[in-house]
Image (cartoon, rainbow, N blue to C red):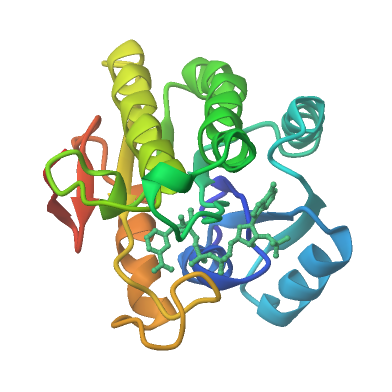
Length: 233
Ligand SMILES: NC(=O)c1ccc[n+]([C@@H]2O[C@H](COP(=O)([O-])OP(=O)(O)OC[C@H]3O[C@@H](n4cnc5c(N)ncnc54)[C@H](OP(=O)(O)O)[C@@H]3O)[C@@H](O)[C@H]2O)c1
């Protein structure tokens, strides 16, 4: 009972991304599990593989713009469609006061957390538009909410604010096209990034992104969610 839908997930080799791949595959969606290491992508895909699941491992460092273009072109050649994009890959480098953030931390963080997901959206949206269907999920953070903004981690926080802004821009530009573009906070999740004391399991953390990746046609667009509920910008 395969749906034929094809989903690209970035940073699919571990953490929330890996779990998003697992949960979407359970819904009979074909998964393009990407990771910056092909070996890690292949290992992760092999671990998720089951009779039902269709999971394909592909190499993608999200900061490699040409690599993004090649990947999307290859998927279109091979599968003929891209229905879902989950921009999950992210880095959190600066657990220090904003006053001490370096230009290098800011640049590296923005390359991965902002410029890369924007490039991915720019590359997949034309293909989604042609089919009149798309679900784009940006895995952001409550730390990027201006309403809830606190001190510290300026690079990470502001990168997620920018990702939220990009979500709004692309949702406005795709309005009425069948493409829904949303952003979310997965919660504080027990991954390498979240640490062992985090409050949510990885399965719980993947819930809202997976829900957004599989929204019905009358679902929201241009919104920010946590626990499947709207979150203040
Ligand atoms: N965990 C939390 O509590 C929490 C809270 C709020 C938001 N988030 C967000 O949730 C997302 C997933 O976080 P996580 O907790 O699963 O983090 P994680 O365990 O640190 O995993 C991060 C993933 O991103 C990948 N990645 C980083 N840079 C990449 C690049 N240039 N190209 C391709 N992949 C890259 C990593 O690949 P490698 O294995 O190659 O490094 C890894 O697969 C992130 O966007 C994060 O900001 C997490």
